[in-house]
Image (cartoon, rainbow, N blue to C red; front, side, top):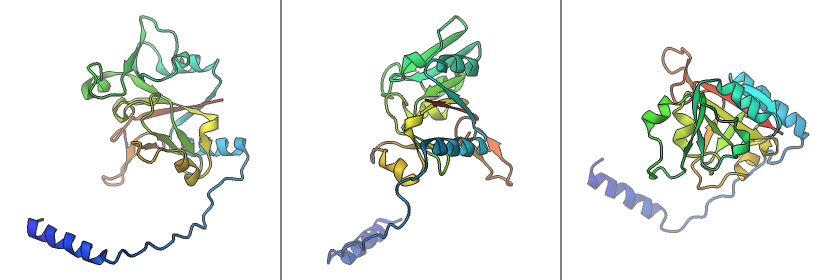
Length: 214
């Protein structure tokens, strides 16, 4: 676009807004609060995630480290954000090692794309999950880490606390900081853009394990 054309477009916009028109009130007749029981909402989330080809596990704080150890296998090198609860992780051995990634991408110890691509998995927490759509929201909190660490490794183990599961999209968005960098996950990364052939792992992890923690 030329400078003259851009100037003209902006001038027209300013002219149209010159009398400060008021935006019409948006009618919100959709449901904004769930009336379902907690167990039913969690079951709905699990059903949606499984339908999207994620693997779902239900664990307690006591059984979580064992489950994560089984999912990681050995040998394994995996990434965790610096704010992740370390009690969730299995005991480190010579065959299994966690690499802590700082939330600040400018930090000297921040992992680059090549390093993230070389690890076996990443473990993160999550902000909120919407059962209606089977979507997990990550917002860059200290226990979720930078967006890159949940997109580059081929295997993502995502821990979802049961009290962070809601039914409806408006309920989920109410728990998200408006200025946060939001990553929405509904199953492993997949696309069917080319000849309608499903290909997994194009835009993110090929394998997604969701641990419902309660």
